[in-house]
Length: 358
Image (cartoon, rainbow, N blue to C red; front, side, top):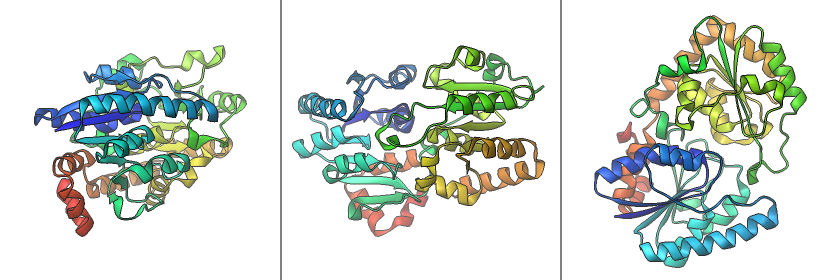
């Protein structure tokens, strides 16, 4: 089977890398296209995945429209040459359009229910959409819900083993508790109009914590000179090891806040937009994620999470119970793609069939 995958964000590399490895071992052939966004292409290289670059993308509405047309054309010509059996992506409008033109199935995974622009662009042209339980939208018969978070594509215990060498690299020696902070650019289309935390808020947060805790910062934006001492320079494939061995996560990144929670690191998300996302609501309800857009509340609650032994014990218990109920989305996707389209019918008729893939 020939499979064409489009990568638009670093997280998409993680979603598909174990799937690609397993499927290649079964003899399937892959063709990967990737946007040059953040560390996406570095991750692909680190995991030994060959890819074709589709450029950096554009900002602003007219830039994005121009990039959409250009990318649709280039991916159409590539796909026509490859003649794939299935096109697979995480909410790629480009691949959805190409699949429609070629009359080939486009299977899409999507866990961002607030991405209304992306939904307008890809949903009508896709054959099947796979989302986690808790996703706030329903696209009808083409939409399948699986009981997991997408972090489990790569953080499921079957596929993730933390590397303790990261502690020495980051100077985590146990003398201080470690707080991992992530600041984002908030430039994705589903972030338009959303408030990001200010430099003053970042400074207040760090100054309030730096004397008592070890601070690690990962940032999409350029940090001011007085904060550079806290910036980490890690190989991108090591970031989850750093999250695992931290004692608390605080940041704007939705992806990293849920990753931390799944890894067993108490997590505070600062982004107000996260309150609208279904999977975040689910993690809040069960008690392994908190969202506080107000920086002072986030600071107070974060310190309580760090130092409250009762909270930490309860957090571990709830997390373990949650993970025990979840399926492995990688194992599910391997079965689903290999058996498509029969697999779609099976899951539509018996959603509980997915629990064979724990």
